[in-house]
Length: 132
Image (cartoon, rainbow, N blue to C red):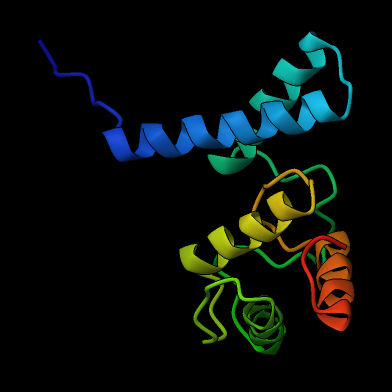
């Protein structure tokens, strides 16, 4: 008999928190319950790497990316007081920081720095606030 792998408790907590954030967003958008569930499932698929966010075009920055664009993203997040190390590597810390920013603006927190996310981030840096 083989043992079944169990998801660590801290991972379950994170997934539950993410699901709650997506459901709250879907409710605020006035989506029907069936669509709320569908959007939550999509968010999990994105988080698990089975799909990209719906607005994730070719130019989106994502975990694993490196370079000047990532450094610029991290710098802008840092300017807004969102804790992130500016090192040019799109690591887990950067993904979480992007999710925090997306959540603060009522966006779906998928952690990919899409064109829309980066435009909103630049706007907020110019205005120096996260409730833009």
